[in-house]
Each structure stands twice: as C-alpha cells, then as structure tokens.
Length: 468
Image 1 (cartoon, rainbow, N blue to C red):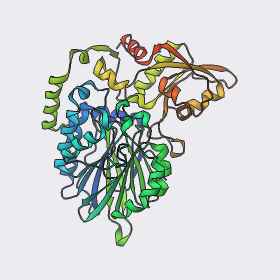
Image 2: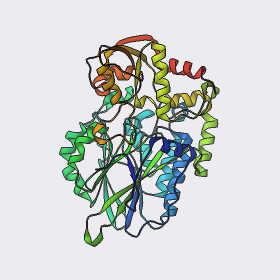
Image 3: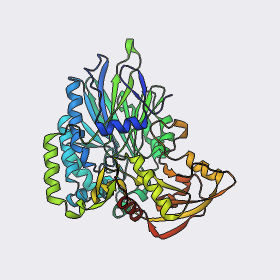
Image 4: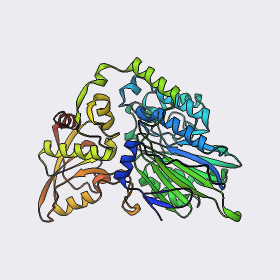
C-alpha cells in the first residue's frame, strides 16, 4: 500500500518531497521520457480543480500535445474531475468562462475528453446550460447530478471510451454538499449521497466495459467508502479537496492530481503478461507558468484579457518577498490572522486558498486567486492537548500517510512549544467555524465571531507591509 509517491511506468518508485516538488513547479523541471513501453495499452491524462488558473491553462493544452508526441500511436483520453471554473476569478466571471470553453474545444480536438461535474461547474450558467455548452465543444459530460425539477440526471452518469483495442467506462460522481454550490443554482439540484448512489448504481455501470474508471468529485471522506465498491484494477480519480497524492489498494489506484493547474497526472494502462490482469502506473508531472503554451489558446487568453480585464485587476495589493507555494502562502496568512486576532494559533481551511503568491508586487487578480474567500474570523480557547491534536492534523501534503488523510484539512500555525496543561487562544476562518467537526475534529470548542476581523483584509494588510 503506497501513498504520496510517484510511480513511473518502469515500476520504480520515487518518494516526492513537497518542497522539491514546489521547486520543480517554479522551475518547470519535467523529466523527458522516451517512447512508451511496448506493454502500454493507453494513457489517461487526469486533472481536476483547475479553477480558472489561466496562467497555466494554455500550458496544460501544450502538455497534452507533448504527451501525444512522446507516445505516438498510444491511445490517449483526457479526464477532468470537476471544478474547471472559478467565480472568484474576475476575468472568468466577466467573460462567462470563455477561456475554459475554448480549452475544452482544444482538448476535444486532440483526444476523447470526459468532464465530471464539480460544484464549481455551474459558476456562470445553470447546470443544464453549462452541460449544453460543454458538450457543444466536443467534450462529454459524465455525472450523477440530478435536476430537481424533473428528477432526471443532467448528463449520463457513465461514458464509454475506446482506448485502442480496449474499451473503458468512465463514471462521474458529484458531491452532495449543496453549500459548496453557487447559491442561485442550489434550488435546481437534487444531489445524491455519493455512497448510497454508488451502492445502487456501480453494480450496473462498472461492468459496461473491461477498463473501469471512476471520477469522483465527492471528496475523500466519501471516496474512502466508495473504494471498496469498485473492482480490483479500477482507476479511481478523486478531487474536490485540492490534494495531490497516490494511493494503491491491490491493483486499484486512487489518485488526486492537485489543483490550480499546478500538476497533471498520467495514468499508464499496462497490458498484463501472459494473460495476467492489467495494471495502472502513475506519473505526476508539475506544470508551471513558464512551460511551453499552446499558441492558439495563449493568444485567445490574451485577447480575452484585453477585452475583460480592468485596471482594478492589476492594482497592487501588496508585495511578497519571494515566490510562495500555496502551502507557504497559507501559513504566512495564518500567521497574519494569529497576529491580528492576538491569539496563539490560527487554522484556515485548505480550500480557502487557490494558487500561491508571486515574488514582488501582488496584484488584486493574484491575491484573489490565492485567498479565494472572505469572512469574519472566529476565536476560541483550547488546552495544550487539544492544540497538539489540531496541529497534528494540519498542514498535510503529498507525503501524508493514507491513515492520516480525511480529505480537506487546515493550514495552521502555533507556538513552537505546546504545554499540555496550558490554555491557548486560537483563531479560525468562518468556513472552519461553520464546519468545525469536519475541520477541527470536534464541535465542542466554543468559537466566537470577531466581525471586525476579516480574512482578506488581514491578508492584504500583511502583504502591504511585507518587504523584499
């Protein structure tokens, strides 16, 4: 059973150091590989939680071209596990996701592409209209999300793909947490409990093809219960939690591909020797803004930016002394929250953060990509044992063990020394306060709202005083 590593097709395993991977993202260090081994039957290129990360959208399409060029004749499928769009991205909002739809069309021209609906797909249109627009690009939608008005699914729950001599079935599962969808579309949705739905539908859908693929945007907490329901050898991609790791159970591989277009996953389908069962091997590659970009999509992004961007988007919010990866930026802001609230420790939900921060001037656009949501800060008090428990579950990364993972987590900061018998004051963001059992492991901590303390105001103030 492996977790947090990168498996290459030659079956050697290389552990991934989080900081080294972040450096690779910044420097765009991607190993050049030769032609695929003779036993490779197909490649699935997987991503999810892209969230309108336009600085790497054209680069993602170019990476697809690179994979195709390096593996001539090998069937390729592109699998997108939800949350392609981001309402908080002003350019995406004003253009109605024009860049995403152009990306979908570019991908569909290159390889069969399947999208599983996430909670951020209906950011600019209702679900039915979003599905119609996506499918008009040539991308197929697979999702179990149901229209409350008529009781019918917005799209088929399964899509079949031809991968050369092999046929695959791709099943899409969506989160049932209505609170994560845009308010305006919630009344139209009737999401199913992912586990109940899978128990009722996997037995009929998974046998539709020999190669079995599940795209789940239900979150890892649900996926833990879904994994025992799939046959050995299934490729199971998770999303929604903004995680990146690889986990194996027998021949089944469960993978999260990260978020914000910072990495992509290649899943290599290997033909078994002498009739043995086929296996999946996984390679996770970093993707950086400096990587080669598809010229056509890059030009479209420039035109769209010229048309829809405003001076406010380019306004400087503050300054970062260095490039900060998402986790580093999150901890920097958590420290700012602790200082502003006058507390000992602070914990912020991981999906509150999108991308990291650039070195030098931080524009409003970059700031909003880093700190996605605003809201009041809440404060409370815990003893040292409780604080140690909170910290032990915080700051997870690709190397976190499978046993420790529960999905979304908190980025946290605390004193270097924690004394069990001492009382400590903590601060959390409003999303963590509203979902304390999920993020803190308990709802027994009394948390009091501090309406004068707003997350984005605190983060912007911290950047405004940060010097190179």
